Amino acid sequence: MKKAFDSGSFLPSLKTFREVVFMRKEDPVRYSSAVGEAWMHAEFKVRYCHEIFDDELYREAMHTLLQEAAYEYGIELGEMGFDSNHVHFMVDIGLYDRPTVAKLLRGPAAKKFFEYFPELKRPKHEGGLFWGSGLWNPSYYISSPKNLESTIRYIQKQKYGHLGRKQAAQQTLLAF
Image (cartoon, rainbow, N blue to C red; front, top):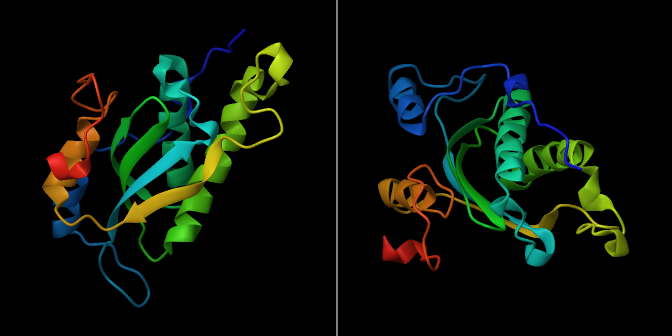
């Protein structure tokens, strides 16, 4: 039986990617030795390609958990879109390097995800999907977009993206 997930546990009011970009231009991020931002396109894939994000409860929970992890470490997240077995999003990595961002977001989100949904960690014969393993595939994608607008549109057009368009087959980034 699935637990009810409280998405109200996320503290700040989140801004859209466009609001963040506009805000940043007027008030850039300032670090002790740097000013600016580093927006990247990120993608995390579920281990074994299990299509868990077709379930709205799992999808909404992961959306909130990634936002909470980002907030905890001062990482800005922008547009986010889910497909059946992976999530794409824009992330301002700031002064962090890419492996650190992946670790800071994937680790806490997966740990809390399994705390909310322990049925996914049950043994295989009991219907579990992730017995003896973690949630995420060990590989990930984080790279600066070649064309920011096209990348945002690609994220929005994921199966469960902002535009809510369900596609018969996933398109590649080059199609946009």
